[in-house]
Amino acid sequence: MSQLRSIQTTLSNYSSRFLTILQSSVHSLLHPVTNLYLLSISELLIQIEETTSLRQLTKAVNIVQKRVWKLSYQKQVLQRKRLVDALSLQVLHSPVPSVRLEAAGWLRTLTQAGMVTEPKEIFVTIVTAITMLTDVDDKQVKEELLAYLKILFDCFWPFRFPYPAFSREAFPNNKVFYPLLPLLSVSDDVQDILISIFAELPRLDDAEIVEHLLPVALEWTGHSDLERRRRIGAVLARMSNASADEALRNLESDPDPIVRARARQASELSV
Image (cartoon, rainbow, N blue to C red):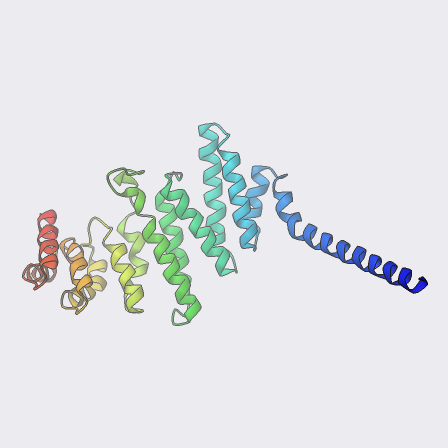
């Protein structure tokens, strides 16, 4: 009987110690997130600037967004500008790739929702982040590059008809995208999304753009990939270049009817 009581006491002590350890672990895990709810917007923005935790960044941004909705319009504009600045700092300076991409994703979300006052700044930030990547032959770096390019392409969405969130006057200047041109030679998948990005620009007749983009566009006109031939007409039509015009006319005689139709449409729109 004495032995049984001893065993029960030992098990009780063990359970108590285990429960204490478990409670301590859960408290440590939740403490940073719980504390975020007690912070002011200014303090939350500092957290967003400085955190190296993906989870904490996401939580802080969500809390800021909820708080900002309750403010007057003028204060919303001011606080969202501060949020954009904090996120931009993370994109450009965080040592953690996942945090950089999460911050860039939030900039895209704010842009698509029409909640930024200067959309050009978002494009500049993401292009700058792309140019800071080194060794694009490295698998992880290339994945980050492709993720940034996809985010950049998505940021054009609020400029599109029929319900654009921004006027064409707010559209970024072609020079913003010059740093991307050397990346056309990195790989096929990078080149593919870059063509989509440059196809969003209203004009492609800048000498620097033509120098890098035209050789790739001409190559696409004779590519075995049918989808590439279908897409490239819109790019050629915006170049105002003799070689581009000739290549566009050749596409109008392509064996594929969709290639021909899109080339004719691109040619008519460029007139």
